[in-house]
Image (cartoon, rainbow, N blue to C red):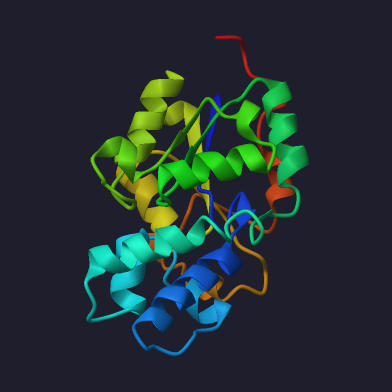
Length: 220
């Protein structure tokens, strides 16, 4: 029986792509690259900041680019990030039912923790994890998910990981945990879900979790 729910952050709990795009374009501008659209940037989100900078600001010192991104991001992440539809009420409902919950994101954990608090979700999560907590092992490495399971004191069979990207499917499979993706009907991602990359469930909206998860969880 599912007793714990683990969540990705960007694109799952929150729409932070405007903030990510703004900081990415700031760094690109520092090195003479033209700005990219949000749609172009979001294709490369999900594998960590080093991957994002290496891919979208190629040929520059990656540590320097990462530092510039982070410095800029502190000025835009709060104003350019909002909860995805249905998240506030669904997370509150799951907490009321007794689910233990955690966040596992490739975003710098300090940023994720601050955003979770600012968006009003802090009290619902037992832990908020990032690569910083597991030796910089970013998803699809399962280290974050396995650490979350340990902290929540549940087995892989008692938990589910909720995400919105292929990297989340790979992470869930690597951790031996069921993985569910939230993918709107018109998303091009649906065409990428090959047999080896299919999640255990594909949801159209975050609110579906209220129907799919048990009405109550036994007390620990």
